[in-house]
Amino acid sequence: MKQLSKREASIYYVKQHMALFACPLCQAKMQLNDTGTMGCSKNHSFDMAKQGYMNFMTKPVATMYSKELFEARQEVIASGLYDPLQQKIAELLVGEQIILDTGCGEGSHLARICAQIPNAVGVGIDIAKEGIIAAAKFYSEKIWCVGDLANSPFQSASFTTILNILSPANYEEFKRLLQPNGKVIKVVPQEGYLKELRVQAFADSEKENYSNIQTVERFKESFAHVNVHRLTYTIPLATGLVSRLLQMTPMGWHIENSEAVELPQITIDVDILIGEGE
Image 1 (cartoon, helix red, strand yellow):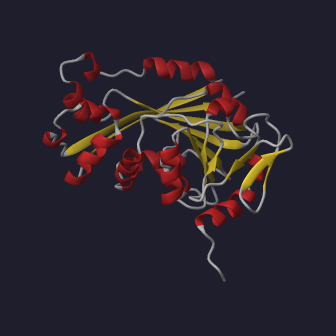
Image 2 (tube, one colour; image 1 turned 90 degrees about the horizontal axis):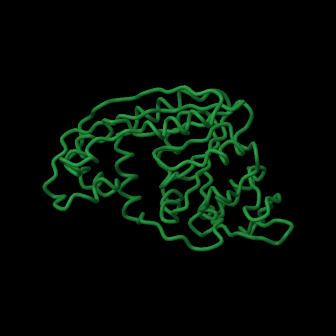
């Protein structure tokens, strides 16, 4: 039997989950044909890329995130740096899950969380095309979309869980997309997040100290029921990962002599915000 190409395999997988999709331009239902074109009744259409992702952008968007950044991010996450965070999120999710990761980047968090949940369906969306190309390269049997949450390509009440990990939020859209009794899980840095790097990047400046109070308060205002879990741990960092960590985080971009940076260990300190609707 002929092995399917990445594109063919993605078309087959997405076809099984077409109920999730709505046209980002007119919100009509969509169909995906065998050639990889997804279209609606008003003749708006979008194509499956050869790498195996859907591109729902109507015009190119420039971002500051490069292919190299996303490959560095994948390597750092694959090293296990965020394993306790991913495990904690997976523990919060019970029953059959259809998970949307908003601002998914190269998809590592979503893929590693889904791997801990039987039969989970994972969908990742990001405005950064390079991130989605990397996601499709690294992780199969997921749905990867280049798209903007302001015009998202999904039906209302499609997802049991929406993830928003260290990225900007769109709470009104999250609530539209969430199923009844679903959860929005947002991860935001706490004051100790990457503190060893923060000291070297912003020493003796106001940015050396970080507060997430405003972000947490806005989240609490957006949902009827909110729980907050703080997760803090420090783990050794392999020497070879230091340059990759500097490459993946904007903090690292502020360090002029990156080769002189020594990070024998690194701290992850985050708030996990869990919001539920009415």
